[in-house]
Image 1 (tube, rainbow, N blue to C red):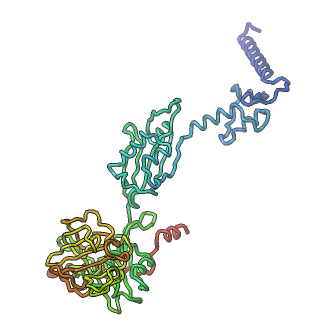
Image 2 (cartoon, rainbow, N blue to C red):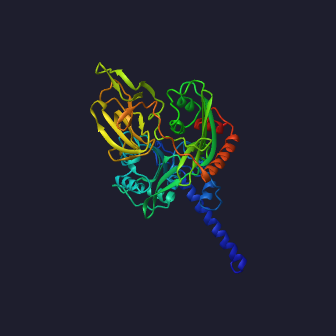
Image 3 (cartoon, helix red, strand yellow):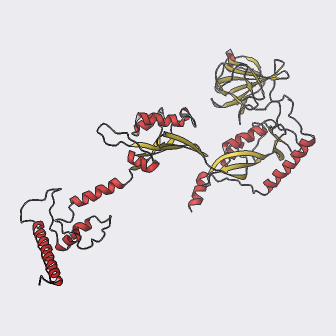
Length: 500
């Protein structure tokens, strides 16, 4: 049989088959545990390995794929002792899966009262070196001193390996036992609704910051309301932004006494542009293009117009500026508590001349310069307490007394514009309660602020008047095409409508 090629091949094939069968039999017997009373010891499991599984493990048969979500499948197939036992193979597979996952954690951090950004980051587990590097990267875009308590930050943490996967960074920082430490991968916050500042960990530069300006959509809004008690309250209840309300008061304050001229049943309207985020939330208010007040049946209309020199003012329908040299009231919506003239002094106990008028306002209410001019005095002045005096030229001056404090930069020699905040009301000097004492002086003599006649603003003429009429017609067309709303939707209203 061995002399022919076929015979020799048959002999070799038979011998190999017998050898494989013998090896498989011996391995199978060796894998079968002997009967023993030994209890189960963790991490020292023994298994009875079926012949079919042995063939698969030795590669003699294809091993079917086992889903990662079913790690016990292999143990059930292998007939492991106890179906809930965690075996060495499962622990190995679990370790590999955990190692393959990017170790990324996202958290919201908040600056507590009296806390710094560096302190907040260190409390969150960031090293002192990384925390200082983050603040240094932020400084060119935003001053850390401007961060207020309650500001929230979105932070992303990870190990050096996770940093490489998350930001293509290659960090090598280790702790004392040689194991990798977590690092801050990114920190982002919104100093305003239209800006987002993010500090990233990059390689090899370290931390770099970027400021992304969110694209806002401009829309026209036309709002109006009937006044029940005050203009401010009616406007806020109508959903008009507070900044727009204050600007309305300033626009009409040269011609309207909000304490005496505004009554229940009067009305107002305002047409302005407003900016919204891509999600539809109100971000900020723009310019007022037109506004009107109907007082005791008489309608007062004002339109925004930018003049050839770049200055912006509000004019009536005929092109007469709404501005006067002096505002009638230097505080918003104040009640007159004491008028001009002789009166019984509540502290001194005798009658004497009251050279101004008193506005009853809470301490800390902003006090505005009634007109443009130069500060000639800012300090304490006996009975007046803290006092500011502004010279407006043409022999006119105004005085503001009993102030709690002065606005930043207000000192003798400082220039102020009409409407600038120069101080804050209080009760310094001879005062029984918080209020503002306001005087108008002409040639150093005090006159009644309620009856004084001051020069009005400019009247447009020529080419500028024609341009104003064209601009007024354009604004009136926009107003007519935008229905008036008596309740503007706020951010919560817009979110609810979007979720429905």
